[in-house]
Image 1 (cartoon, rainbow, N blue to C red):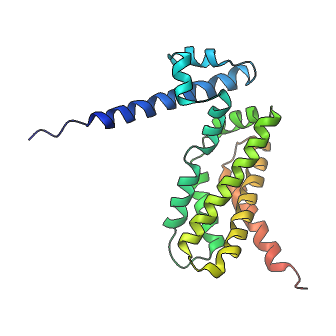
Image 2: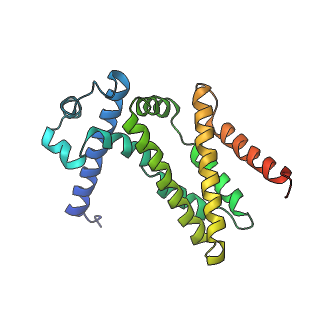
Image 3: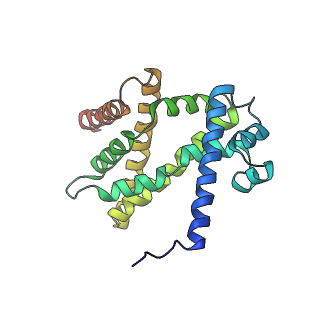
Length: 204
């Protein structure tokens, strides 16, 4: 028996997603090669094989391409990774191991190249910092879903804040080192440093 043909709506959705990804990847490649400021919308559209009008159907500006790259699936992936951690771990360990799992999938050269582009503009740097705030909120929501006791919400938010801070520091140190090593090693060290300070801090 023949399998049913894909539904038209499903085909259209897949085509839209493929076009979006092609535009984003084209923009990122041009940003890395020519610089963010020197890359025009028309250049991205031409290289992606679309019209300027079609570009605006998917992105409002070239800045949105960079923001899409930074946001693309991270919050959803982190949420999934947090909930997938086995029982018996404390929140700090759950977040650490979830982030280590995600760090293993970072494409080194692409990450370093695009992050450098984002550092060239004050506006992009500000938006980048704001996105970390959104990641923090998403992480807190995942922790609350796993530990729904309202009395723990504030403490879980602190875990989210500290963990995302560790991630940011680890990424900065990893990039400064050239990205030759895996990002996981820097993330592990960042979390270990937090644990040492917490355990060894004198109680006033």
